[in-house]
Length: 112
Length: 158
Image 1: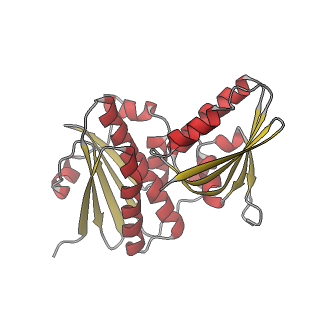
Image 2: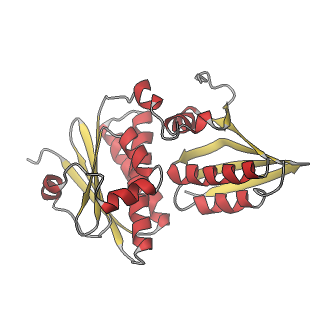
Image 3: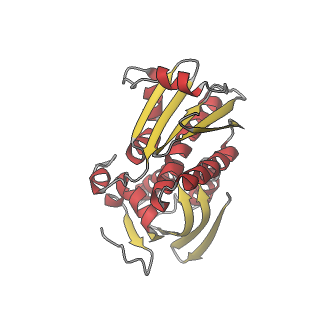
């Protein structure tokens, strides 16, 4: 029940590789990492969820807050590597209408 | 013989124990024969209830305990989450738990707390919230009732 966030930066693109479970305990770690770049104007954030094996509303809350901050400075956010389960969570909450989401490669159930 | 097996765990109202309770519930759901997707739904719904209880304890500046009671029937799993640290008389508490109303302040708090209650209601078959000496969330999931597309179409933001 741990969370690791690896950050890679290429010019103005920040790639966050999120590994583990996002819940009430680990969400603050994710929030802290994301906030480091949230206010950089016109930057792109890519959140790689391919190694996230659990997420609930605490993770969605962190994500929504980050998304708002990035949008406020004309940046963009993309979510990649989303499995079927996470996809469903984004769909249930309507977040899939707001943010760009790429399914995990090789996941045949990529219905949008 | 009791119509169900009952398992109760008590954890400190701290975020690091949400995952511990979640894994316990995952194990029980697996024992009952829920599908992978149903177990994932149960994990999220129960984590939401327990997370709310942890937040409540934080807001009140209490060093409380959370009690999670699980009743395993042949065809369903009932989960009760109480933020006031007292063990349940499960059947008695279940009788007292009625449908919640919007007027109840703590339920309002749950709603404003974000997506937690919304997810519980979407992922479980039945959710009730009871307010007396703290908040008790009571939820049920039946075996073999996969939540379909109709549930997914409803969204919180749209």
